[in-house]
Length: 496
RNA sequence: GUCCCGUUCGUCUAGCGGCCUAGGACACCGCCCUUUCACGGCGGCGACACGGGUUCGAUUCCCGUACGGGACGCCA
Image (cartoon, helix red, strand yellow):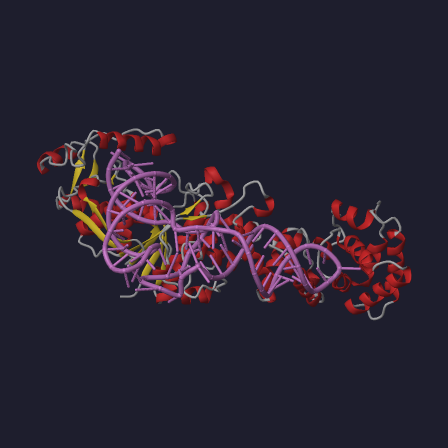
């Protein structure tokens, strides 16, 4: 049977990097096995689901290069089938009506309240099978329902036995029924609940492998119970280790902000292939130990067996703009920027320039070669695409800032530099042709004549022409900026 | 509280009983290259949580302890 996997996010916010990694692993597995990668939006929580989230999830997947097969499925559209399944289980006596009125919960601290109640229950030794309606006669149950009394439908979990499944990552898993509550399938307002919906949809979509976060490990037992009650084939499961914050806690929007959102990486200048590569290495490692892997190589080497079991810490430094996200992610992005085929990088730089009003149509036309050469020259030391429009600004616009420290270091400390640079400008005007070699010869010759070290002029020029103390070879800069701009900037005398 | 999962350099990880004086990558430090900063090259720092077994031999297998994580809803 051919592999069918799915990514099933709930559209209640941006695409979390943990979810993005789940999507990636599912996608890789599908592509590796020649199976199908399906996308299902779990929008059954009408209160929290938004169209905007759905859109951002789809955009995020697209950005990562994860294309899905077949039609997008909206879980909410399947509610009738979910209800029908619950009713069928009710008919078959595998589920029962629970007439206990719905508890009102304060949304604020649900998690804590629930954990506390669970603790109290175990301490008092409350039996999971103690629901008084569990053994209510069919006649009585039907009568009360017919009378209009509200009820939820719960799965009647057997008293004795255990669920078991073999997790591809974590191995054999077993859980006693005694530890599983009679989970609610249908709310008293007729709304189907998560575990039911997931199982019904996975069955109807023909899912063969469920690859998802380890936080679902306990849900899986409940779902196995449902597959069995429904008489359906249980799929294979592969649970993924979690991605944790630097403090080893769960990565969350509330606590960690935008650094956990996939869109942040797009918006802050990540190359999709780099981020995808980084994400793939979080919890999985390729057999050969090679770390820079193209999409094709990832597909080629990927295997569920290569997934580790320990949670990974995603390191970021909240208050450090230079290292705002994981060091390795940043390094990988820089690696991609400086080594990827130039023709693939150029459109990304173009988009970045467009967004910053630095783009000129000539770059696509008569200045195409110049643009390409310049990007190639400066990309060597950039970490993100943002650097092209910030640090790289002076290469494309006359309106750029001078770095104060650079001015102090390379210009201010030598009083006669202003005169020297003017002299250098004069000299450069006579150079023919004007390129890196001739500019170098001219500068060195001029330094000799003036009896100063070439380095003085090189560093001074760099700061005059780019506003910075660091950058590519000065002679390359002369060539790329051209004679006119070089000369003009050398003479533009800022106040030092 | 109960159940489940995990624990190799600061971080991501390799390791599936002897190849391990534990390998790689990022970060950090040094040297070389370079009159800038990077890149690159070379080198350095740096880990098997702890205690018991099993074995001729444990990072690898078993048990326990500690620590960390996850789950426990008429949320998903």
